[in-house]
Length: 113
Image (tube, rainbow, N blue to C red):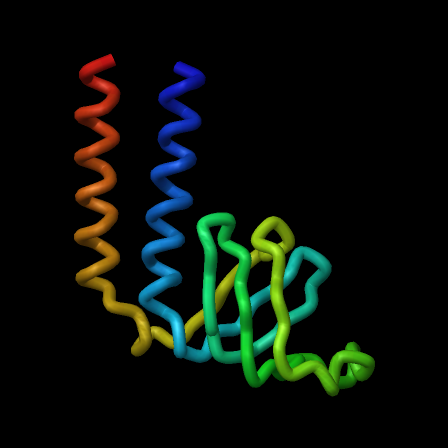
């Protein structure tokens, strides 16, 4: 059971990784666990869901004036709470198909064990 749970977590991570790869060069807003909101162009994402942003702007400029000069940043995946994006940037069909495929893989993997 523990192995299946870990495999499920890996599948979910890879699904998010694949999705975020399709969002590269789009504008996203990232909310960190410390409540900081950063908006910028998604340049890259890796398998740990670390995020690189260009053209960064702080959403709450009054609250974080020390970050106004930041134009590029690297965000460790473990400190991300949310990633928000425009609805028009999301390919919902591709996302639904990916979820279905991963779900089928997961079901067949559990049946064989």
